[in-house]
Image 1 (cartoon, rainbow, N blue to C red):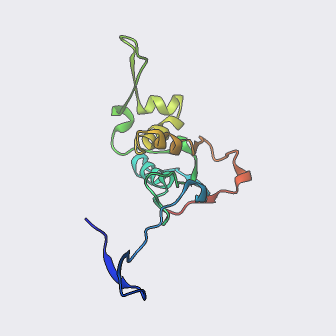
Image 2 (image 1 turned 60 degrees about the vertical axis):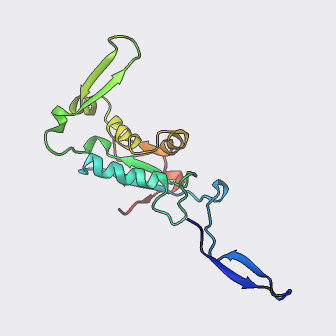
Image 3 (image 1 turned 90 degrees about the vertical axis):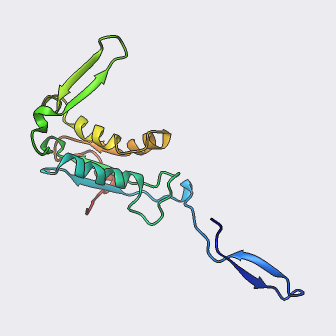
Amino acid sequence: MQPLLRKVFSTNKNKAVDTLSYKTDSTRKEDVQRSWYVVDVEGETVGRIASRIAHVLKGKHKASYTPHIDTGDYVIVVNADKIRFTGNKWAQKNYLTYSGYPGGQKSKTAGEVLNSRPTQIIEKAVRGMLPKNRLGRQMFKKLFVYTGANHPHEAQKPETFKF
């Protein structure tokens, strides 16, 4: 598909010059302005809140979103131990890990993961919604998950994100 072209006549010998009628600005990584946001996930459903967090980490909530540049913001998640699942997922949902050795696959239910490491539930859900490449790993580094209501990022002056 070719872009729309319009004919512009210059004053020199009436030659027609083809020019674009629009210009798409692409954000450069030097021009990205990052903000810090706090998300309280107490009582929220895992999948719904994880997709919203991934949206902010990618930068899709900004008008300057560019797919090949990390334009996203930093996200601080608090109260990760008070997250909820719908249905019977606490007993039925399994998280698999594999050591790489024969017989090295381990399985834990969501309830067991909540008891041992509650931040891992949100981290795995958000990581699965980001791109599976270098850019996705870079985006994931801007996520900070904490179990309680306190976090050590007060110096960055984070705002509460309105979904």
